[in-house]
Length: 285
Length: 325
Image (cartoon, rainbow over all chains, first blue to last red; front, side, top):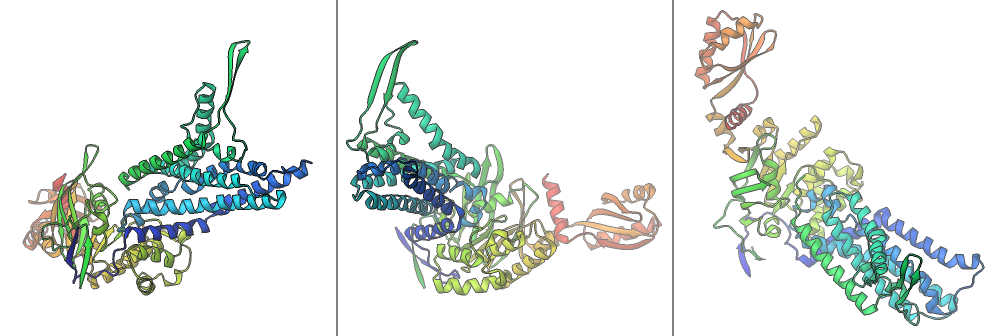
């Protein structure tokens, strides 16, 4: 519905921008934040170190590189998860809570901007920073792959796409944590611990109990490296009898289709919950 | 000039005043920080919002600026209920709530550009207004320095600058001089006087009664979340018959003197504040003061000076706060 209002006496300049325009503004200044902060620099430095170690260590230890381009990419893809966890912590871990704890919300929230717009602008900026990190990582790895093996890994490209999807899911979870937590430090630590320990412990415990953790986002992220293995690995379930009774050793492998769905569901649900918490949160202190 | 605005279903019925607060209530888990508050701020007036700590001033301002949600009631800004449509309600509003923090990686120029872009200013308007508002708050020489290491006073001035960047119809200020050194307070007070001259509608909470008396046309007093009184500063001061007086006598102010003075009719809150100085409160205007002076002389007290203690608004404030306890 629109209504015509006589604003002859209005003194204010400008015309209230659309939500889309405001999302672009928030995005622009959040990207500027990443460019000027040490966080982006820090993760790029970690990324460079990881690439250097993976590339330089085999010849230094007297090992040769795999001749197959997909096998070559497997080494790089197996470190992508860690890179994404660090990125989610740095770019999402305190994205919302810092506006409250850092009191910048007193500047931003009284502006004629919806919380959903602020969230969207911030999230897109975080995703852009994360994508930059992941794309540079895979870009360098794929170039090295071409240079060293002489082949181009299509599976490596598929791994990149899964990595980008996992990045979105991880960022969404990071945003949710930051919308719920009261302090920035706690939020950063919880985001990091969630991916590095809590999810992994759950995966391990469920697998040991004979339950395939297909519904865990961390388990689903295993597809990022698994997809570079040809043929795609399958579940291995071994059982036997030991001194203390029956033993079971399960190695579950995530299904690609299900994992994509799981990552999408985590991303969507985490984002919806994040918006709900962020929207109802008050600057009460 | 006509301006099309969507989603204007939350306009109040024939609201012509810039700020209209109606039956506003905020309940924090059973504690009513604001209780059925009603205030109207007239166009181009400068209203002071007074009350002791915990009275509900900041809560009211935070609801007006969409930092808190109201439990019930409405708060119309330019006719649009901020509790229902904050985006449109806040379009023509500039606000400084508490002392906001700024993004440390941005300079004042970049911060103002960010805020200007959010409210829809053109690049040209942002450049022009940035120059103007930085001059107004005397921060031109710091325009391109990162805000991260600015003092509280400097941040407060940048906060005021961003609030008036798009020349909004309404400016909402929450204790703008609190925490500033005397020089900072003086400078902010100068800016407030400037805002008044420029015709902004200002709603300002403050602890500084002299500041309110100097700058504000109108004042609203609240305590325990309820409105005690509202009106023009001059009218309220005039209507108040509560006076705090400071009297200096030639003799020492001992127990005997205090006992005699306390026995005079209408005298309350008597206390010695120096070897030969005491203060007291009386009800009444000039006639009551003349009568008291004559009574003091009749008690053989050699009165050296006899004057009102504190600003008139402070007297009114103290009297109303006392009554509302």
